Image (cartoon, rainbow, N blue to C red):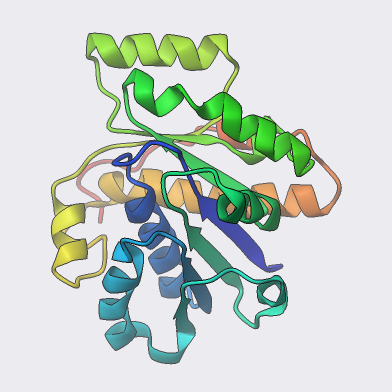
Amino acid sequence: MSKIAVAVLNRKGGVGKTTIALILAEIALVRHNRVLAIDLDPSRNFSDALGFMKNYFHSSLRVKTTLEDKDADAPEEWIVIDCPPTVGETEKYAIDFADIVIVPVRPDFFSLSNLGVMYNVAKKAYKGKAQLPLAKVGYDNSVMAKISNQLISERDYPVAEDLPLHKHIPFNITSGRIWSTGLIARSRQPYERLYDKIIIAVDKVRSGITDIKEVWTDRKEETPDDEN
């Protein structure tokens, strides 16, 4: 597997950026990859949560708070970048640096209102929409979720995965546990699918394929609830 750099970014706060970045980093570590985690958010929640993980993964995990050109030559197989809810020069650099940028959105208008700005920035970095897929977080059958889904469809935004909200995940993160502790296979699968799709997407981009929307639309059957 080639080196993978993934950033998690949205101009809207509170959409799950740090949680997704943390889960991607932990899945990579559990699968025996070395991870360079870069925390660009001044809140440093990503760094704090990963501090607990040092006890589990030791030298396989390295955490820093700046993104530099030399990081492209880092020895780690995965680079995971947690961005603040802005699109300033640092975030533009992260978009340019990353192979894939995951954009978490909640079922509300504010999560979607600034996506045009992000895609314009990405275009200047020669990245298409498909390299900035949405991760829909906590979408349900509510009216607002349906309206949000309609807007996503009308604007042809690529959707990488639907990620359910699960009470165990924030508890595990704030308690220093692995994110998936206590979750059955079906609850873990959307996050693990996202991870696997990122690998496929990066391989395609590296081979010169820029139209990777079909990577995100691939939906595999879920494992039954009673499997762990």
